[in-house]
Image (cartoon, rainbow, N blue to C red):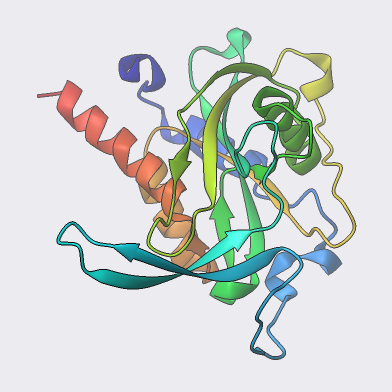
Length: 236
């Protein structure tokens, strides 16, 4: 599988792919890089997140306490909070060079713009598959085909019980709807959509962070590092 993802790219090809969506699909006046923190206040129970105290017994029978955060929006249909989307672009008319769709948005807790995979919360009575397709359209404008999903996973189990599923969505650039993708952002969403080649993804992410003073979501970074390690292993 990993051998199919990687194909040596020429400098010209890589540069072209890198620039294709580096320009924001959002007007520059709404750039997420213009957001800033104005204050931070204590919060007991919020609209979207609450804090809880857990009392439990460790393996030795000792009573212990743990503090945690929970989302208030978990779907009872799936018992999953969110879907994160690995969406790969391919064009059968232009070889096997593949790109991944990414987004940039300001995340207040980090006080920075974060490079991420497209993602979103699962609405009530919505399936994981429909959420992945919907969120990809809303955040990036791309129409894709749902291929597979991971088991439920936790990205920060020491802090929260918030869980997610990683969905793989294939995007065919020959689909007329994907010729000029237009995100369908909700009010208050300021997202830049762009793509990067899968080849050298980790280096590209680190270069962008240094150049634009932003950061990378850990899940995306781990994905990119995994691709790099897989490529190294296949060449041994």
